[in-house]
Image 1 (cartoon, one colour):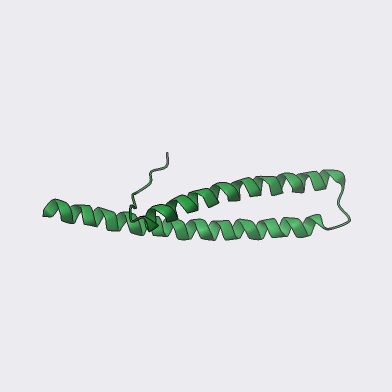
Image 2 (spheres, helix red, strand yellow):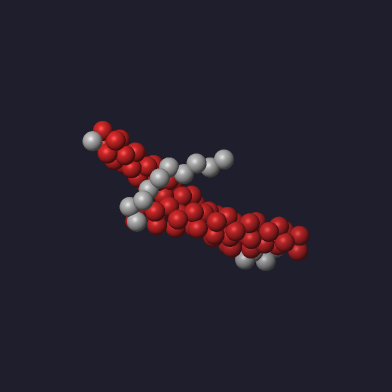
Length: 92
C-alpha cells in the first residue's frame, strides 16, 4: 500500500511540474511571437539599409526556429499530461 501511495505522490508531483512547464513554455512562445511581430513591423520601414534588412531577417529566422523547437517541446509535455503519463523531465 505504501508503495502505491508513493507512486501516486510522484505522479502528482510530476503532473504539477509538467503543468507548470507547459504554462511557462506557452508564455515564452507568446513573448517570442510578440518579438516576431515587432521585427515584422520594423522590417516594413522603408528607411532600412540592406545590411539592416539582412540582420532583421536573421533575427526573424532564429526566432522562428526557436519558436518551432519550443512548440515541439510544449506539444510533447501536453501529450504526456493528456495521456496521464507525466514524469519529471530532466534536462542536462
